[in-house]
Image (cartoon, rainbow, N blue to C red; front, side):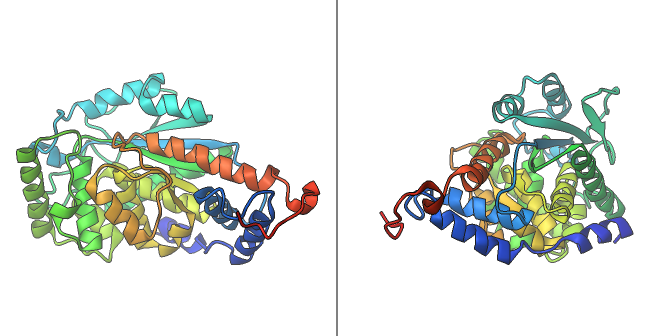
Length: 355
């Protein structure tokens, strides 16, 4: 493991339990029945513990969208051709993709990163190039990448988030683009959680039942050929992962090391979170699951990390769309704890705070 990655891992500390307790007390004393705001109350308390501050701000948010190609796409596991990965980066840059719309709605900036799209791109002021290579190798025939490439991808993600922190950042969301990446995410999920491939593999971009059976067989072959060690996040990433998944894992680790909440999107972001979690279980303290994806393996991932999604809207687009909506809810929860008055402050009688 490189010294840079080791330094980041060594900086990650648990959320502050004393601050969490104080935040709980304040939340319970606000002018409302205790528990009446449901999950938002829990989120506000968790955010306080992450930031070591009960009444923090959350006005500066970003969604990091990472794109990369996957060699396993040559196995015919997607309803879309591989060139769609590259084609979709341009709508991100022009501000007309779904994630851009949602990001504008919640006031977040979108950071687009090329982690390994085939062909690459001409320089663009809104595109960060952290390319590890022009797509991974076909994991159904051997490792998706080398151990060095896996480490490089994670460290690239750390560099991206540190640059965003330098620009000002209170909260970060994760997003992705990559034809074939639900196949990689399913393989990661099966390798780490130990669940059967068929249980954690969905239809991704919209393949039919016959194609789904083929996709499952391809993933099972990849796991049989590569034998990823489910206890070793870098080993799993290198054998059945993707460059954008590694990059997002780095974003998560770097944010946690700097006490910044991470709102993860759906299935691909969940796979990145699993990799980060295996490298440092403490990152769980900094993760907020924005929503439950329609991809069947997503619930398995979240249960494994003991995370409860804020929303269940039947979404499966990726890009960071769910993260954008999640950021909005996190910001609302933080503002409640900061701006709402307690019973004493408002001069209102507290009836025991029930009902």
